[in-house]
Image (cartoon, rainbow, N blue to C red; front, side, top):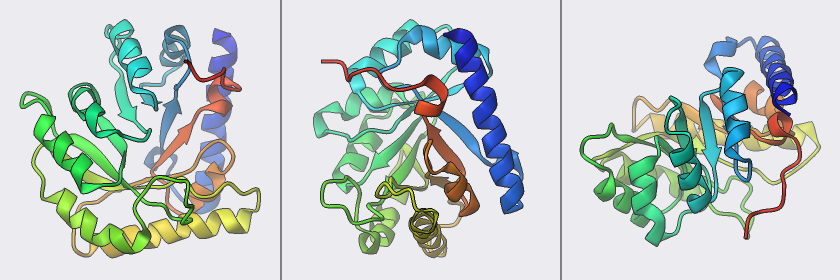
Length: 232
């Protein structure tokens, strides 16, 4: 298992380098975030031994358990799942990044609950770029005003935008959604200087995401293999 994870990491890094080369980008400009939801702590240890330090989690209690089990490692933890109001305090206390903020109420709670001794919590505003009724994220037209509100809150730092576009095997469709998010970030950046993050692209569409400017790609299956069932 451990050797296959290391091999998978090498393959994904090669894929990122190739996509960056085709896009005329420096491979160092793209961060690999390992999506470790439902994966046991020993697999995260194996991924860390192979050079990864950034891990993304969707399920809060599972994530808190792993953060405790892996406290001896210098890991950076990213929360990437939907956020309920009653779960903001442990997220604010234990994570370095949150990619899935889509409401001012959630951002305010994270701001108020971030411990004073910790650095500002890095935030991405999640945008429902494909306008799917079942998907989290603010609508694109609401993003500029919401971004301004988030950027004014203490204890958190707005870094950029995140999206999970509607799944598609068509490269043109993939490119279109990622380009729409990139243009939206450029628009918002006129009012809020310093935004530097586009969290977009997963195992099936990372090439299109990188070509459209992704700075963080969220990869799970290609690193760890098919996910086991969600824990009860």
